[in-house]
Length: 200
Image (cartoon, rainbow, N blue to C red; front, side, top):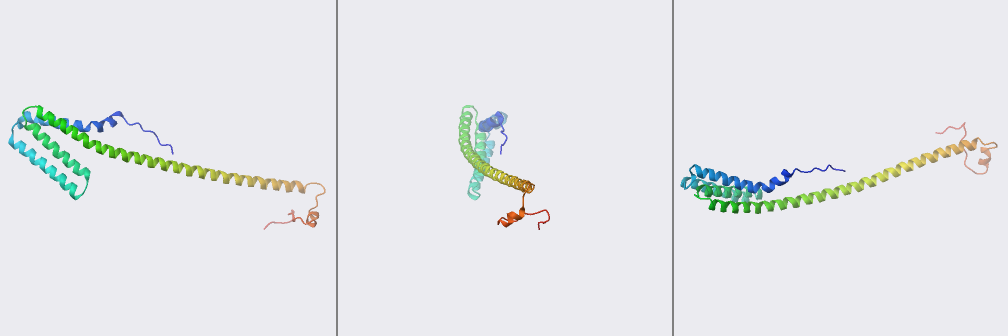
């Protein structure tokens, strides 16, 4: 019933929140390295990134239409956007346009991630509420069963004590001077067992 309390490390809490910014910053850094190594104003490299970005977008559309899997479609569209961003950042000769695209991509990534975070939070809260209700229900059932078992034990204990006291009273009464069981039977009282009688 008592579950251990697990405290999450602060990095485990911060890492998902920082992931979109880290991803877009990594793409920007790699694109600028690629720019410095010959991608600047390279039509072939720009065409390659355009084809890859269009292919990823088409895969996202196909995944959304055929399977209806929003996670797969979102991943394909994110890859398409990252490829387009990398192509423009690698092709451009200055930093203003890549930085503008980086800020737009980061804001878009956070907007998409916030949607999934809200959904995940709602599911987590609903699950915790459901588990809390079940724990309370089972705790109530456990308390009722404990009371029932305790009552049965007490009734059995009382019955045993009553039987023991009755047997002791019969033995004590049989040892009293002048006790005559036949006189009791003649008076209409039930016959008492004697030492000679055996119970079946």
